[in-house]
Amino acid sequence: IRRPPRSTQGVSSAASDVYKRQLLITFLPAIHWSKRTLTDKNKTLWGSFLIEYKGIKLFFACDTGYGNIYKKLGEKFGPIDLAFINIGAYDFRPMFEKSIYHATPEEALNIGKDLKSKKVLGIHWGTILLSLEDPFEPPVRFKNAAEEYGFNKNDAILFKIGESRTLGDLLKN
Image (cartoon, rainbow, N blue to C red; front, side, top):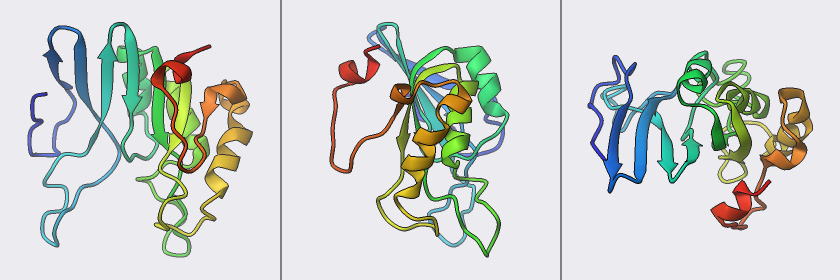
């Protein structure tokens, strides 16, 4: 995998590399910030990944908020077989109404819809308390909103804490 540029500026084009002509990993933009020390805000790149292997497309959002970039990515790279999208750590009231850097469960489904994803796996919830929502609120909201965004409830996937499944099982219809 080719290392992306160190600057967060101008991430309009995707950085890609091919492994043995079967695996393609594309670094794509995300709506987030980066910071490792007190003085290096947004000096390194934050992004998401599209992983393509033998005709399967997986999108890994890392951490992101909602934005129009996902409609553009869906037009360019969709349809996606499975999108892994964060659904927690979004409620920071009273500091500010909502985090623009972390999607709500409904925004995660909207990202999946914009990406033309067949299925969405809700990630980044119930681990450590980063924000003020109940840690078990995101999965309930995610499942309850699935059909509103065009997904069958079975295609809005959640893992129980500690659960694992094979990729093959996740991709089954």
